[in-house]
Amino acid sequence: MLFQNQVPLYPIEVPMQIGSVADSARNQIQEWIDTGKLKPGEQLKEEEIAKRLNISRPPIREAFKELESIGLVLRKPRRGVYVVEMTKIDMWEIYTLKANLYELAVQLAIPNVTAPHLTQIFLMCREMEVCAGRNPPDITGYQRAHHTYHKIILEVSGHRRLMQFASTLHQQVRRYSYLAFQEAGHIESSLKAHQKIAAAISEKQKKRACKLMRDHVHDGLAVLYRRFAPDAVFVEDPNCTEVGNDEKRYHVYTYTLQGER
Image 1 (cartoon, rainbow, N blue to C red):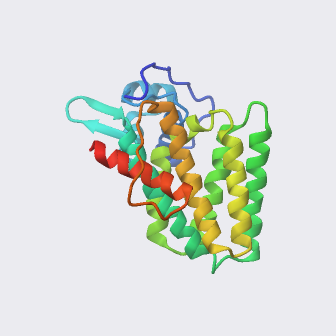
Image 2 (cartoon, helix red, strand yellow; image 1 turned 90 degrees about the vertical axis):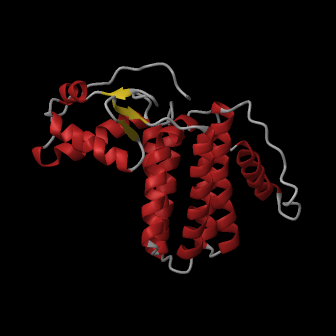
Image 3 (tube, helix red, strand yellow; image 1 turned 180 degrees about the vertical axis):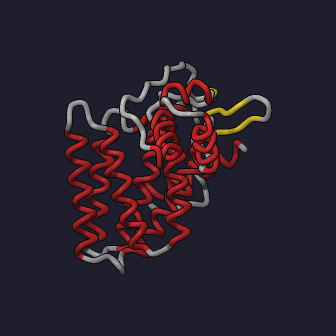
């Protein structure tokens, strides 16, 4: 279990629109999960959340179903609904898959990218820079711009299923990336990585852009391991002697965690 302390829910002050009650409830519960107000393993009680959101219980049930479909909550028979707990194996699976999906997105997007696309990508880089430069850094704003940045690349790739899978992974890991961005220096290194990726895409340097994207995702995994699995022991994969240091680092994760299964 990665978290133990409980933090009470914060009430909503702005009334929700009737036509989007279930969606609003889902978004609010997901925000509580993402920002750590709801902890992994914590039980979600319909009545309590309905009272805090000042709505009836049916929209809460619908919100639970949607959150369960993307892997954020788990319904246990005769026990209730709980926030899903994530192990280091889960992190490894999500981030290594995410690295490959994002790399593929870059590979497919570069031949199709246009000047307006690049303008949007660099605009998100600027927005991330503004959020990172605030004191304290605006992590929620940074995540929002970060998500839009990758969404643009995914959309330009033209691969519909790739976009769907990447979206699900993003939602599953967003709460942990929120914590990772609190680590000293990580938000700054993330910003630099995105700026370099954007530059490589604009110059049509496919190989460089793909490597930068892959390394960026692996760096996020490394930050989470340092925080949540400091006792993890990584050994070098002997079959990776012909690749660079960054690529070898990825195989180190793969080799070690597969051995723990």
